[in-house]
Image 1 (cartoon, rainbow over the protein chains, first blue to last red):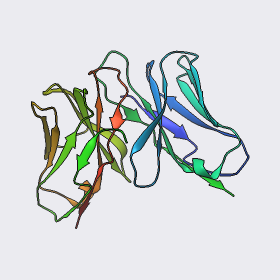
Image 2: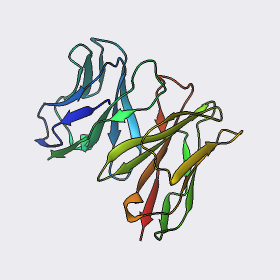
Image 3: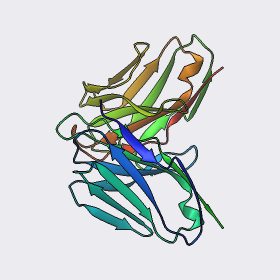
Image 4: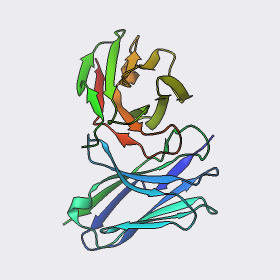
Length: 112
Length: 113
């Protein structure tokens, strides 16, 4: 059974600081997604990482994928309050029907 | 706006009842997915349909069923509701059945009293 673990579960950080969220998964997969969710809202797609070594950046967020280590990271640079949300990673096993297995989520709170 | 439409947005009902949640996928998407988000279980995949046929099943209870109609909209039926079924139910859609980015609707919040 595919398991996806995120850490930390909760992250409180000050504006202007940097931090990294980690996503580990248990079985082979070459496709990893990062989503953002505001409280009570839908899931917004942030990044799709398709291959080993993939790196994508959008604004203050950068995601990377190491398929050999089964690890993805979401790095936050110079955090701002608007980034406060819950961030999920999700894994889709290559070659099967598409059913995303989500991590537990990391609730990010950026304080002024 | 993802283009995925879910109705209703909120649903309040009692234990033992039956409800139907509806989802219209993005224009051009043939695949529909249902997910449940609860405090206990997190985000869990329930079921996937592609062009009217069931494609994959996840942790879906026997009391739950779904279908996708010829016009590609989908319905999730929940019966004999229990307190633990209270959750946010998301529908997502994608173009194809495998390894495609999924676009999520706003969800239906189901509250069981």
